[in-house]
Amino acid sequence: MACSLWAPPLKLREMSDCENTHTNNNIITQEFIALEDFRATGKEQLSFSAGDRLLIHEQVCSDWWWAERSGCFGYVPSAFLQRGVEDVEDAWQDEEYFSSYGTLKLHLEMLSDRPRTETYRQVIVSNSAALRGKVVLDLGCGTGIISLFCGRLAQPAAVYAVEASPVAKHTEKLVKLNGCDGIVSVFHSRAEDLTLPSKVDVLVSEWMGNCLLFEFMVESVLRVRDHWLKDGGMMWPSSASLRLVPCQAHADYSQKMEFWENIYGLDFSCLQPVAQEEFFSKPKFSHHLDPDDCLSTACDVITLDMHTLSVSDLEKLRGEFGFIIERSGTLHGFTAWFSTFFRSLDEGGSSLELNTGPHAESTHWKQTLFMLDGPTGVEEGDCVRGAITLQRNPIWRRHMSIIIEWSIKRRNETTFTEMKSKRFPMWR
Ligand SMILES: NC(=[NH2+])NCCC[C@H]1O[C@@H](n2cnc3c(N)ncnc32)[C@H](O)[C@@H]1O
Image 1: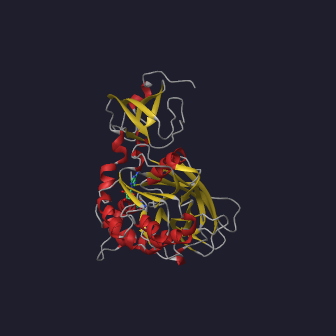
Image 2: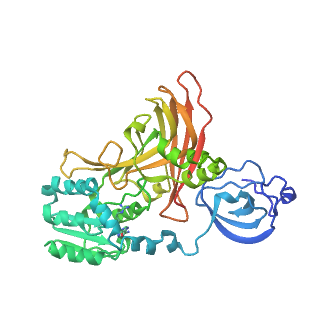
Image 3: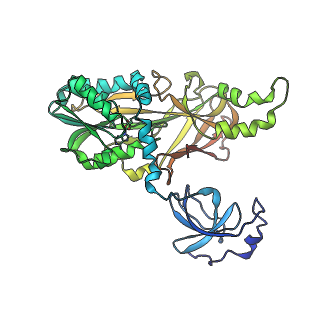
């Protein structure tokens, strides 16, 4: 590909076409990382992909910088870039992450989540015969609840309960208190750093985060699978699906946006753009979606096979959707949730499902709401199509952005509106 010369073309130095006329010809030569893809629209610009490392030679103005990538030079949009993290370890924020699991607060929340915990118990009970003599790895065992189910409700040969956070010291006591110390061994370590006594027949883990992937604990599960799961071994969950539905959110829109139109008879509506940015620029997790606010039937947009999924697949996952509006109303946005599936160890046995959707018993995840920049009236028979992309943050490895693209075709029209797009960081 033809590369531009080293020095930025003079014309941009005058920066007549930069938003901010302040130019600080600041020579820095610092490494930045691309958060998302950028396709050049002129020969003086430099294309790049999410995750690319760029050398920034000059912040010619606030919006456009002069950059180098693999010996090519060009202008790049500063908004697409984030400074590289000196310490790669920081990228996982492990210290903060594991200490958050070191107290009982999150474990109380998870153990209080009946559908979640009961599903894992049911998986052990319904596979208890097949688990006889098997070796089980419980990755991120927390208080050890799944390992204790194995030890008390089945007769495995051994259970390796692996937990990196300080809660592991309590797990040891719980295993003894419940008479499972002959079967369950607790390892206080990051699973990736461990040398286990043997390979395992079953790798069970409760790794799902908001919008299925947040925290990206799933990467640890895949890495450990590749090292320690026997050929033909079982992953629990065996698969996972992210679901999406176009929805109404009148309460959220009223409380966060319409609210400013009349404050004790005063007009505060000039704050609405600020409210839009503050309340609707990120996903709303733990959202309770009322089934009556679903404007269509939900669809699976992304499905993960936990036996074949690779760590590199996690960088970018994309799913397309097409909804027929089934009830006239207001399209405020989209809501997402997930289901995980647990295949039976018995050939032909039935799978079990943990469904975190609006039609199932509520879980601690609830659902995740993505509010678009303004409501749109929709009629029964209209069509909403587009795509959802989960783009992993190339720097902060437990974070991602969710990009939703959508366009609408009215039932009595033949063409779709121009595709719109909105990026929701979760949370960086
Ligand atoms: N469903 C979730 N979003 N979180 C629930 C399970 C997370 C539990 O796994 C532990 N954990 C997470 N990653 C790891 C790891 N790589 N190694 C060991 N324990 C881990 C973490 O400390 C916590 O106790």
